[in-house]
Length: 164
Image (cartoon, rainbow, N blue to C red; front, side, top):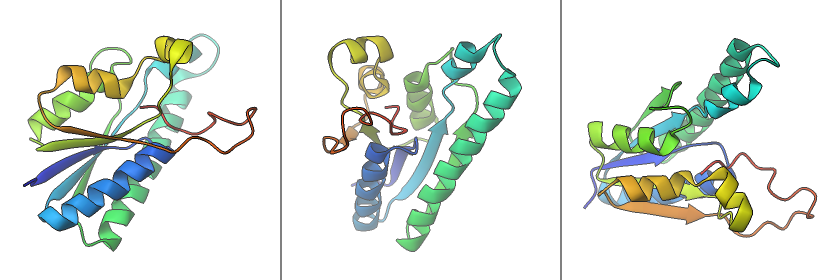
């Protein structure tokens, strides 16, 4: 059914659940997984003029490498073949979704798997939605996994690393 599954990794809870689904599917289909982390360069522009952007980029890259390493370790434990890719600069400022679609096409993936944070209303309008952008730009099947509603107190809710 699927031979190549691209998994967008961001270190968040929903991406972790998406990773579990992708591993399960890869085992059943004997598929390979490509783990993709795209650095959110919009954070560099937010930091411009107030801090050392090279230092911020270095921190973002290290975070991406950690997320990819953890995901690759999970693949290894499940005996699933995977490759990792970290993209430091998305196609166009902050355009993570376009970069995910481009990498899915160039690999070429049969399926894109990613988590979604499930923001609604004003927060979604302000933040945008990477998963929505991927859906709008690809003709490949996309499996979106949303983390269950937070059980954290309201003042801590939304403090995960989820970006999609």
